[in-house]
Length: 365
Image (cartoon, rainbow, N blue to C red; front, side, top):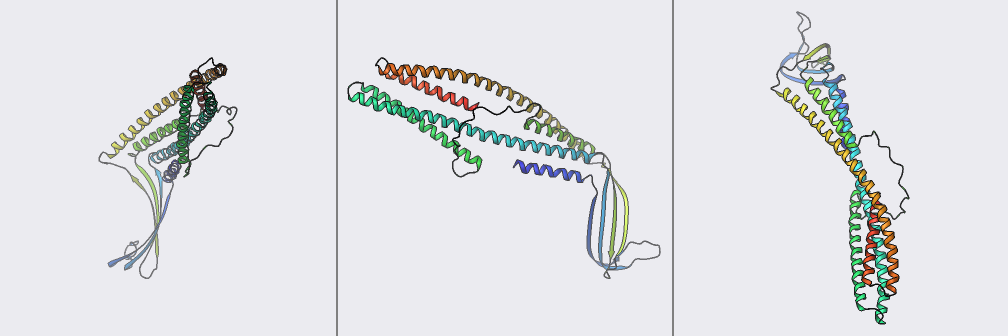
């Protein structure tokens, strides 16, 4: 839709440019009169032109604008600015589409990572449950430990189902963006080890700012055109006309001249048009200031979140590594009968949560 809007705005440049160029047109007609009429105007005193009640006429006319106070050029500037604004809107629509689809892909990969961790946790709990069931049967473990494992295992399976459901919803969201009738899942490809080179975005306005600037230029040009509508307009014209009666003996004549048009009274319409164009210009100026401020704040917040996420990622990595070492030690204590199963399961759940959080923040970076 934004692409078609740009095509429409670009076509208006040609329309505005046409007001500065000569206009050539041809006409033809046939008229049947109730009474005989003159085929040609009177060109010589005492010589009366022939009469006929069937008149055939053809004409070739040329209109050439000479001066209109700059109104047509202001209209051309407004059309060009409108095309620039439409181009910026198209860039912004592309940017928003890429951001939305990329966000869905990132979120899907994050859910896949979480699902992989949770499924590994479910597999480990199933193995431990089988081992504990054998110990309970041999009288070497309390039945309460088996119930505790069943509770943890059911909770992990429920978490797995919730993540799978969220992943399927995202797959349908991707299908909507890509125009598919089936869910779309990202390919399981290795992550890049590092991001690409930093994009050079200095001194390059965002599409939102570029669009607001173009609309301000457009409103200024439109306001100038509205003011100059009160100026006189001078044009030149030339006509070559052929007329004939039933005998089809065409006679030609030509005429050239100048025409001046000056608005004298418009019922207040001209004044209202100038006031409206001025208000549009002021509104565009305020919107540009608001877009610039919003973009600056957004960039500052994004930079702050980026640095904060980098710091969090390092701390979470260190915390997960320390928790993993602690869990390994607690497994040995539990196997030696010196640590209750509930404490081990709680610490393992904390380790799983840290791993999921690490993958989530790492995926954003």
